[in-house]
Length: 528
Image (cartoon, rainbow, N blue to C red):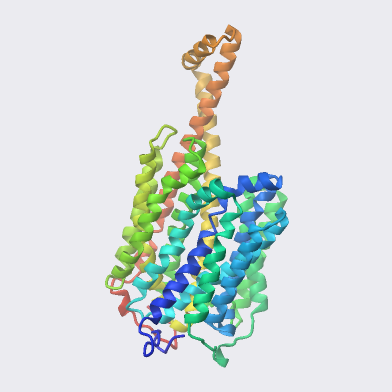
């Protein structure tokens, strides 16, 4: 698919690399969109199948776990099958999984179909990124990855809006069935336009079974523990078992990989200071992205009283700014060093989170919307430079491995970010509830003054004097609980600001010079 320096063959078709980019964008956006589009539809699915919230969670959890497990296998399958065949096979699996999701007859069938979707999705994004890296040289990668990132980064942000609209309009099954025409068309175009690539015999490395097994044990146990910890209790036997198994998996994975010539994950990538710095910055950026998709919908729907569609529409402008800005700043990253763009983006994300520290239930829609514009702009500024710097810091022949690591880090760090913020939110809610309750008990006169107007309203509605004060007391308790939740969210947004601020530190490990001038050694890792 590519020649030695990573540029596409252009003798017969000078536009071939743009055709590859267009095909990859369609497939990657479809896979990325499905990671978040289903969340707003879970209540409808639960009602349709008559199941409980504990079991319906597996529609999302099963996809997340399978997606993370399959990502590390992408590079090995690419060496065996070639980029074209693997990308088309992944698209086909994802489309077939979407069809089965749309016609699922019960919840186990839906969960199994979601796992099949994840098998395709776990390959589409890293292989797509690798294909873009192979056909675009270092001087154009920022621009290309900026365009590619329109779908991959903006897709999850658009998911809640699109999912809410489709579910309300035609039902939850169509959030999956809408993938069919897109998937079929993309496979057909890929079959017609993508150049055939035959892997070299020296690329066909043996499969690292034990490395994959221990990495899968770590990922499944770790992510399962994170996703179920709040519900099961962090000290429960189930969660403790998850942590023990995750520790064993990680330890044995590192031991196996240290003695494995062709590991499932090339740990040698981290010998590059630039690649390692990009990974660390990606963690901070992912926390911000997932924090917004986790905290904001909860606040807007539960405290501001907006429905799913209204919530999605409030987040839509920021997603559009992100999508429109990524090609612009991706092109800029080809002529400007990644350090200052990444720093500007990180500071913008911190500013976005900081603006929500004073949100309350009576805040206007605009007070929610305008910080998301800053968030969209900040992510657009930093994503393409980080991706280009990471992929320019490794040989092009290792782009599939580097892409897999980047995507795996995003998946894991997103789950960590959601769990940390959810746990902190719960802790601060209990703290503020205890504080406000104690304050009310120490100031009975003030409490009575607050309850009096509520009691008068109840009296006016015909309730007895005794019942009126009982109603007022209940309303006051609910008001105190609501105030505690609002304060907890404000604290969580402030805590998120701190996390993103810390992510600014590794930015200074990135190079200041033009990313396109970073030396690419096709035989050995770049040592910066």
